[in-house]
Length: 95
Length: 495
Image (cartoon, rainbow over all chains, first blue to last red; front, top):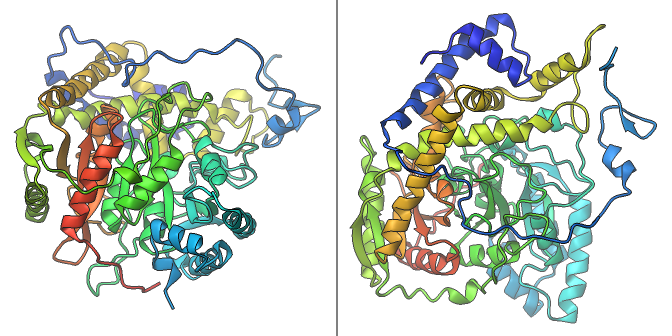
């Protein structure tokens, strides 16, 4: 299947990456090159084969459901581009 | 006087123990070498104060006796590892200025063992690349050149800075990470040794995530013994990574006997690709002969789904990346775009990610978004995961036949020139990982060992693939191969 410019624009939107209008044809072309490569997978008979969930068969370790850390607001905010009054600041979300 | 930078980890360890040299002396020597090697662009954040402080502490610890093997040994850390208070950018503009408040488990374990961090190493952005050309820091350069030709060559990728630094003697060893070949391919391109352990051997906590079901850290070193020493210091269960396995970590170095008599080495026919350069074929045949001469039994094997490993990888890895990289939204850390009047939060996300991610990262995030999107999830993502099951079964079948290790080329060519692949379509670059990516999909340990040079004098490597959790046995086979190959070439110093 071939990806057109409107599909490329939709994917960019879903990925939350701004792509300028004039860059869409080239992007669609790149997608098609990669997807064309991936299409080979259709040659494989996967009937009855389970999709891999974990490469290493193992039961994940469990631990007691308790607080292990916390109380480090300053550290958490220290790398924020915009932090005010102990919170991350973002453009207005709700009118 | 011995050139301290030429030492291996093992030799430096022994000299420290014998009191022939101090960690401070070693560290100062490497800091000087690093400052003289800016042309290689391997070290992108230098940490001389931290290095000297740790070197002093290491000297004190060694003087008291009972210091671990890595104590006092200067190493480099790939920029993908979060290091407390030190820039950790994954070579991306989107993490510009990010200084973690925490230390990755691997770099913490190395620090606890007394290793001395000299600085952070260049890499492809978010480990996505095979040539170190997607880095926000610019290209890392391979210290090797084609004869007298001064064209700059790639050190490979994504752990290109690590490979360049170890090959150029800027550090005794370095950490790398490997999602599709990012330790083994650069190791092969620079004439050094690199091992990707079994998935789950090393904690991924604090390592910037690319594709979580494939990512593994490992050491990049001057030889197999050093890989054994450093790997042991990096392995072990970590309760902060639930996929890290709770198995005892053997003394890998003690397992290096060089005796591989009776071992069954598989030669997979599917790795004999159409158009394989004669030099690679010759290298592989010679490696096979070396193992045979050392007493191993050579067995022709088949891994029938090999051809589908790269396409499956280029569904699974971008899918996981699109999810992992969703966190870079301009809110909690790193870059945020300057917004225009009236821009809302969606524009903030979109502009931030367009400015912060480089081209290859954007492409992979979008491919991943596409294969996970409604209507395509089954056709692409689930199908790729089914193929992954088959690829793993291929390996399980040959191991069930009694195969101990599998010998393959590490890369389809020697190091290529920087910029040579710019006009090629992305698939050409992806083919660099054709021999290594199966190992990540199957979660197995794989090691790249330099065994020869091509007609232009560039190093070439072979890969050995082992059974899960049997890194010790794999290292021993690699050790036997290394002994037989006797690879000693070094790049001439031009930088």
